[in-house]
Image 1 (cartoon, helix red, strand yellow):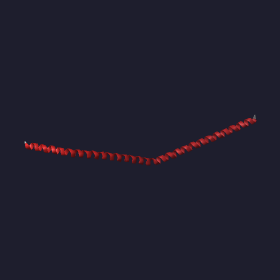
Image 2 (cartoon, rainbow, N blue to C red; image 1 turned 120 degrees about the vertical axis):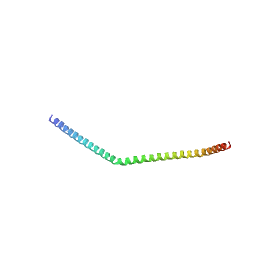
Image 3 (cartoon, helix red, strand yellow; image 1 turned 45 degrees about the vertical axis):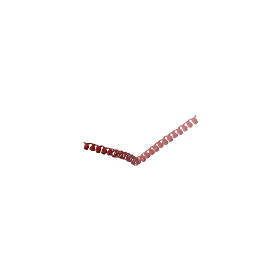
Image 4 (tube, rainbow, N blue to C red; image 1 turned 90 degrees about the vertical axis):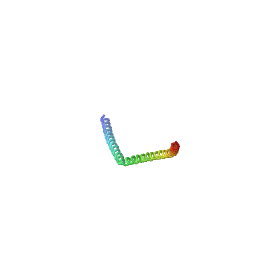
Length: 106
């Protein structure tokens, strides 16, 4: 019986050592994971200005494209208005001339 008790105590002691080692390993892994998370967060925070600048650059580019498109459309409208004006100007002058001639005969 004494031998069995010694074996049980040895097994309990070995189990306690395994549990203690597992707890230390777990704590070590948690600390390592926390350190890695902090490092990743620091790297991300270091990149924030770069990401912000990239976003601003893309926004400016889209704004410039929009302005260029609006200017192009404005020019097209202006050109169409000028063409319409030129076409109607001649007709208006002809009508005015005929009107003047018609009044002059009376």
